Length: 113
Image 1 (cartoon, one colour):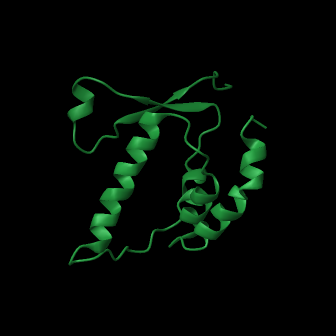
Image 2 (tube, helix red, strand yellow):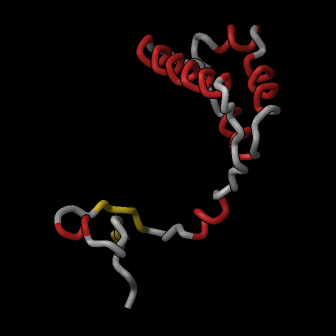
């Protein structure tokens, strides 16, 4: 645990995250909230404050904020996994061709014959 670990325990940081996660609109959002950690740079804190302020402005606007349900895609994305493969972005003419994926599977190990 880092040097701030004791302070986070005293502040009951994990308990706070659990409380906030209880207000998430989806299981995936709750899981993401539980994975949060304190920011350690001024730039990161400034960016996060700007993001929170933008969200606050949207929520408090006349139109308000009414999120649509967000499906949990973890299982579906897991089925797309290719063992021994990685996505590689295509460049050049292939990138603008409609109907083609912008990614291809690059096999890292030879396929047995």
